[in-house]
Length: 433
Image 1 (cartoon, helix red, strand yellow):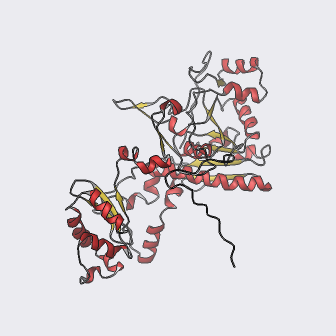
Image 2 (tube, helix red, strand yellow):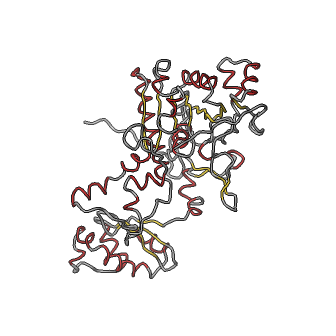
Image 3 (cartoon, rainbow, N blue to C red):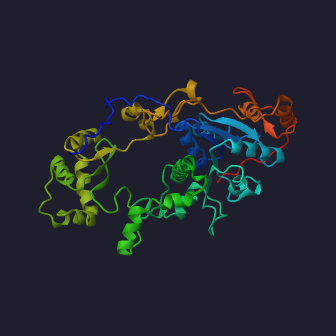
């Protein structure tokens, strides 16, 4: 007789589990040598899981600090992807700055960087450079196209990765009008793949297997999601094309407009098909075009026309309530303003609204709900906010630190002050992918 399984379902369906024990990554030390979005998002995930993350940035500051775009002076969200981190402002191109980095690497578990391929090695801070003194270090490089291959030295950004990976060729309207994904999926996705690789390598390192080098690329990360499209092409030999909101292998599985101008999506396959017909009050059982799931897929365009005619007779909320009651998968097409006030997301803490705590009106949480994950906790650091404490921890006395500040090797400030810049020279900033 099998042993009874333990019920791990949360006690309440309306509240997340209470945190207990220590955060998953408590005590794990991360060097964050990143800029833009992919690298910082990777280290933000690690931070939200409890790691101690030290952001390394030039004494002139990360490229995104304080930047404003357009006549409205809209801020680029530096704070959103550097929350809870510490900041050390240091010129890694200087000999003394590189020495500081090597010292920090010896005290760290993970290093994440997203310079151009080979840039860290040219500074003497590549994985092979650090490995002799840091045999257990997990080193993650994030770039546009990876550390080897004919595209190694090409610049990679989110737009290019979406196009190169094939994703853009299948994204857009059914008439062939291409579109970029609305979210920066290659940046965010690569950050996630980086975090997955880092955590797997950390397990091995903690088990005595030594450190590891993790190489993740924006183009790879998006191309790896092409499961449906690759299967379709291999099976048919026909290049997949954009389908709007429709599914590549099933129907009805797309968006429809309702009488109030709002839009919903449905996925009425298998048994949900009959339930959908019942809710809409249509009988298509005698139409051979819709007799089987495959036939409905083949004839998805005329089917969509029939369904659209019915959905246009009532409001979105009416249809969603009725369809859900009948067990038909469906949901609203929400706008960004709507997701920020959505009750489901609010209960799960996906968006935190506390400007005093985070320094921003709203932050987007890491979507891992657990009794051991602290998630977003505080605001991003000021430039060089932790320089003094970090250097003191490495054994630097006050006089030596002051000399480094005067010579422009490091920058230091308190949270609310500008960095100390006396005698600073211009320094190159990070060049993230």
